[in-house]
Figure 1 (cartoon, rainbow, N blue to C red):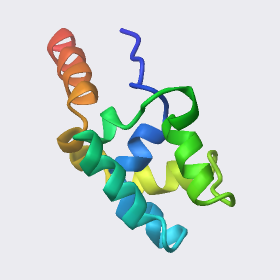
Figure 2 (tube, rainbow, N blue to C red):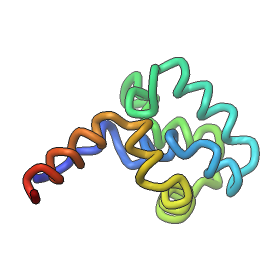
Figure 3 (spheres, rainbow, N blue to C red):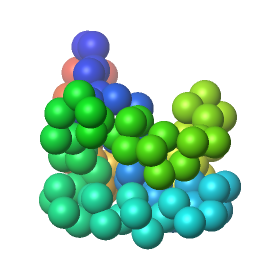
Length: 100
């Protein structure tokens, strides 16, 4: 079952705002504000110019998509990622049900 992350991998970085803030100080508050305004990490996206990765790079040009993002998401953990991202959780539930 393919899974399309809503918008892009950085959707999950918004879920891991506190964890990425440990790697890149000052980023947490802005990401949490965006999550609050959007209504959840999977909903942070107003268009091509405000996609999650573009927002993060705008807030923090030294952000590394291949390093900082995966580290923050791993530190957050799957349980909390599922709690914050219902689209991801529904996909994992579907996989679980097909494997059972």
